[in-house]
Amino acid sequence: MANSSWDERYSSSHFYYGINPNQFYKENLVRLKPGKILLPAEGEGRNAVFAAKLGWQVFAFDSSRVAREKALKLAAENGVKIDYRLLSYDEVDFTSESFDAIALIYAHNPNRELVHKKMIQLLKPGGIIIIEGFSKDQLSFNSGGPKNKDLLFSVDELKNDFSELQSVMVWEEIVELSEGDGHKGKASVVRLIGEK
Image 1 (spheres, rainbow, N blue to C red):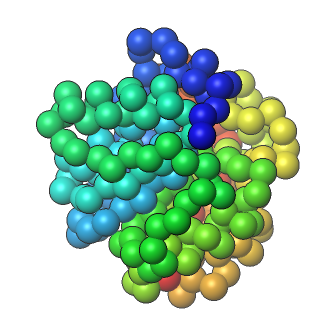
Image 2: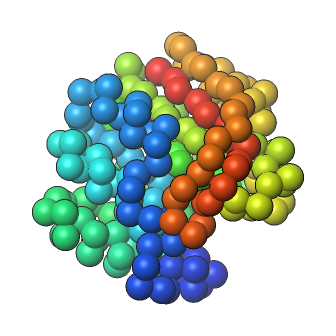
C-alpha cells in the first residue's frame, strides 16, 4: 500500500522533519532498558534510527514508500538495522503484547480511538507508550500539523483512549519545534507517557 501525498512530501533529497529524533521521545527513550519498540507512521526514520543506535530492536511502519526508502538509507548510513514495513494501520498484524515500548510521534489519524486501542493490545504488560502530537490549539500556529481539528489531540481524548493503562500522564504544552522544514517554530502539543 502506498500513499502518494506523503510520497510527494518526502520526495526531496533532504529530510522533511530532519534526521534528529523528536526531543520528548528521545528524553524518555534513553531512560528505558532497550527491548523491542514499535514506531507507527515513522516517516523518514529519524526516531527509528535513534532507537536502533541505543540497542533497541526496531519495528516501524508507514504508508509512504518514499519515506521507507529514505529511512532504510538513513539506517544504513548510521550502521543500524530497522524492520520497516509499508503498511496502513488496518494492515498491522504484529503479535499482541509483543512490544516493550511504542512511540506515536505526530501519528495523527482519523481513526484515533481504534488505533490507540490497537497500540495498547500490542504493548507488553509493563510496556511504555510515548506520544507527542499536536493539540487542537495548534490551529493557531503555523509550525506544522493537520489543519483539521478532528485530527488534533486533546488531553481528555488521550486520557480516555489510554484509561486502561496502569499509569498515564497526559498534558498540553507550548514548545519550540525545530524538526526540519515540517515542524518549525512555536507549537501546541499534547504529550503522554503511559505504562501498561
